[in-house]
Amino acid sequence: MSLRINKPSILESVSGGGGSPDDWGSRIAKLIPAEALGLYGTAVGLVTTPDATARTTALWIIIAVCLAITIIIRYRATLDPTTKKPQTVAIAISVISFLLWLTALGAPASPIVLPAALAFAGPLAALLWGTFVPYIYKG
Image 1 (cartoon, rainbow, N blue to C red):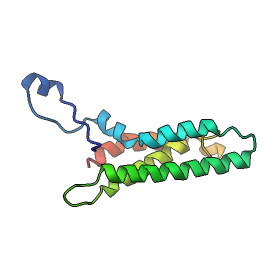
Image 2: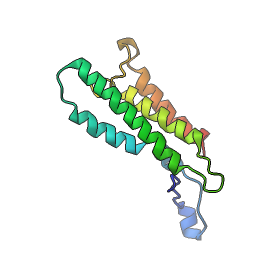
Image 3: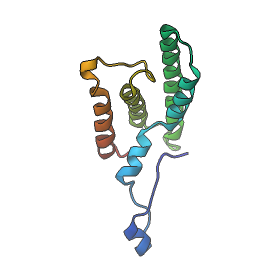
């Protein structure tokens, strides 16, 4: 299993050239740990308790499970068959991306709530992260 998505450019399609490095859109899509997002979104919908403390506890448990699943799946997906080493930077990027996404969501979908004066910081951090990381990390 590989996270690499190779999409031929228009010039390569016309000229019949080989594969190209991922473009920006493909790389940014790979930052998002889809397995964690899908699980989190579904699980949060199942937590319908009116008790705020119980809901927050349940959300933190769901986050822990999603992070564990993200690490396990990214570990296996990025494992080099010859060296038997995963791309630890790619795993860290996925974990950070998930946490930034949760911060950008804010309440009530996420237990990570910033003070009102800093409410813009979560979405801004996620936006900047998603914009610059694909240019910095090419793994």
